[in-house]
Length: 115
Image (cartoon, rainbow, N blue to C red; front, side):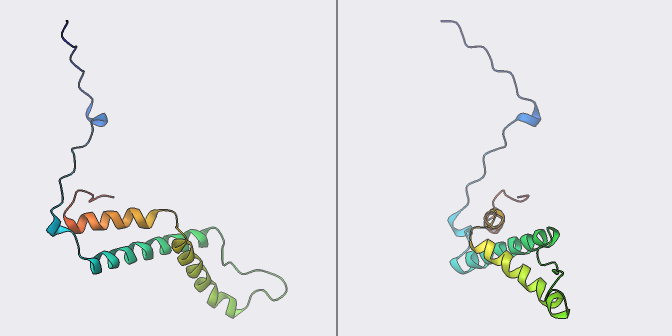
């Protein structure tokens, strides 16, 4: 049987990253810290979504009967923030979960430093 051909080396841009180091059980944050990290990640996603909603025109004063005024301007930002928070509670766009995993990995001394 002929010997198998050697496989060509991949260029560095296509090479697979090294396997992540195992995280020691002692390095995993406790329950209270995990809850705080999840809350921080969800608050970050809510702030991000609020900015996206503002950019899309959500909360902008409506012209016409009953529209406008100092009250509407004062409370439109609160409406946008609440809408963003409810979007996160309904599942969001997945940003909170990505940020949460990166925060937990960082707390545990893992590899996800840039995520």
